[in-house]
Length: 44
Length: 218
Image (cartoon, rainbow over all chains, first blue to last red):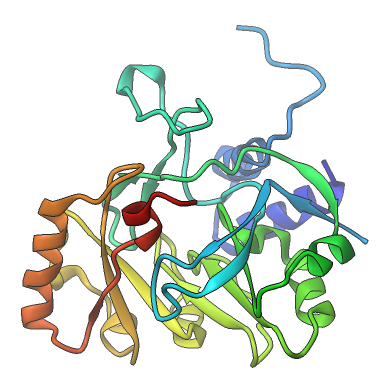
């Protein structure tokens, strides 16, 4: 997944007034919706 | 030059002013508006086997999104443009504006005899070329300036729709389509009746029926 998209989403989250966990959820959720998967999944 | 792509196909436009016009649809991956839901909520299953995402209209009404945008292929832009034998290329999603660089490339590289259409939720600011046809279906967080730039608005109607909750940027727009929230592959007749009732109060608004679901194409 291009780093550029992640950076743009972070900027977008700031523009929407999202901070902290809400901003991370926005970035991570949108990235996952593109089919991207992290190299390491969180242990359940 | 490569762009991110979930899928592409050739089909008649099923919604809005250009209904019935053959277009080359390019679905870009990902969406910044909808979200996945836990399996316990029993979301409908999309034709590809994936659970539908929950989305929200401009006033927070939830509905099931009927598209699968969870694929990511790097595709050659030139090849996609060469394959566009139609006069219209429609970039859709998901939310295609999370890939702004791809939209900029389409605007600069599409031959002048073809029309670029972009279907967006209006939640991400973007300066479109004057020639780009923008269809905006306002979702939660829609920006009024994006609605003002849109050539047409597409408002979803279901049992919880209320005219009292319609914001000014929709009421003031010159071309508004209302569309029933349909099932994944067929029309919802109850919501069509609701649309017709809304039109009695807003006679300038037009009905959009998702032709592709009526005739069974993409």
